[in-house]
Image (cartoon, rainbow, N blue to C red; front, side, top):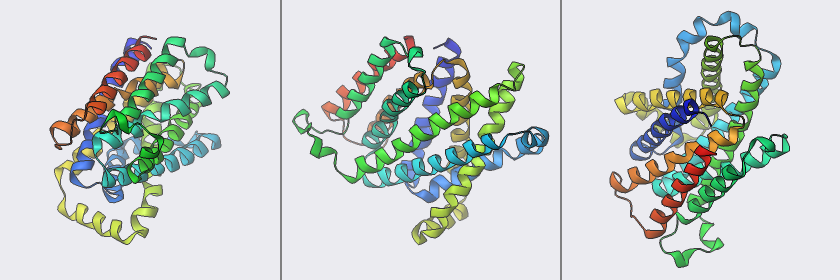
Length: 302
């Protein structure tokens, strides 16, 4: 990974953990994630207004990619909301963030990009995933497969599936769009437009469960009427997080590097859960976090 990619991913990791913390603290619900996505959509309106020519030039394949990635984003947010309702952030967040690494790496191999993944990076990814399997345990003796069959882990894996899906589609879509970029300015402009359109389509997908489920519809009204600054702040930070990750993808040979290294947010998420949400700091949780950190160093330097 280049130092530019590392810097972008590091910043996005901090911001990602922060908006997840706000979601867990304020309202772990589909309604909350719908609200912050709408904030991101509003932020992107000026980009839409000045990019009409670029939008008209987008191919049908790009629009298909955007529709699919929006669907996976919805799956991610549905899983995240469920995981945060059922369990601790310091458990759900690491599981949701680590599991996609294996899926993205395997699919990368199928797409014949495996030669771009170094052995050191693969070892790092394995350490990240292995460390995250320790995080949900209260005691080391609890390390049995049956202990992962619970609602928190189930919803976290649902979120992980969504993350793997949109990461792979975003990489393919941006590879297609970068072929039309002639300067670095073009590259950033295309990435920004893709981020905005992705956010709008995600909102459309999110409106389905957000408006159909009565409880979520009521919660959405409450959130909007309360007009809390934390909702706007979380929406702004989430938009920035996603944009930085998309830009970082332009500076790596394989998306697995970005997906792997950005899991440094796991450490931040665990610490936020322990220190600010007063969640228990069990030994397996701390040990797993250290293993994750070592794996991230291997990924980042591989």
